[in-house]
Image 1 (cartoon, rainbow, N blue to C red):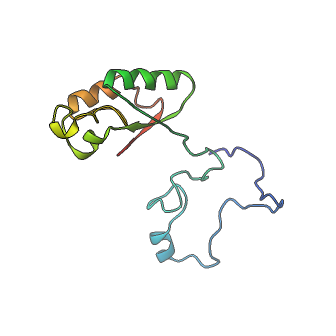
Image 2 (cartoon, rainbow, N blue to C red):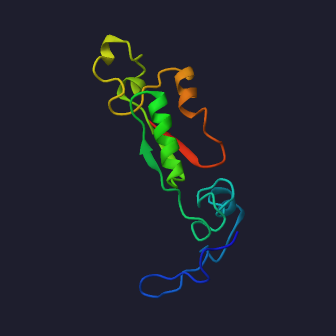
Image 3 (cartoon, rainbow, N blue to C red):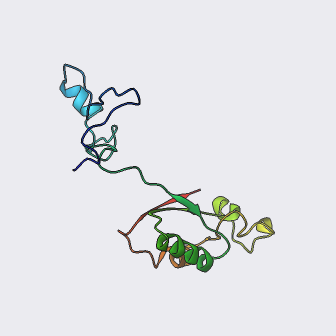
Amino acid sequence: MTERREKFQTSSHIPVERLYVPADIDDEYREKLGFPGEYPFTRGVQPTMYRGRLWTMRQYAGFSTAKESNERYKFLLEQGQTGLSVAFDLPTQIGYDPDDDMALGRSGQSGGQHPHAGRYARLIGWHPPRQSQHQHDH
């Protein structure tokens, strides 16, 4: 993977190597810690860590209905957003249907109401799977 810059250094102009490892690398080290981009991914999923690709910047969004949240996600992607985090309302987070008495006054207020698979499918059904990354925060 290509790195974003030829050289990396600290703010004190001390060079930063691509990878630091102990002088003696044994099988236990490889098995438990591994290398960047390799299982068990304890050193990150990218082989060059963030030298080749920066971390994903996510926009936390979602409100009201699946249709309105969907429209907001489309707008954000059109504006150049590359990562989305889906915000669920409190009743959805704790498993209540929006029509439940316990959800009265709370549905769609702090995020989108997506209490079942059908409504959730409307939320993300339009989304091209490889165009951006999205995360479901709850």
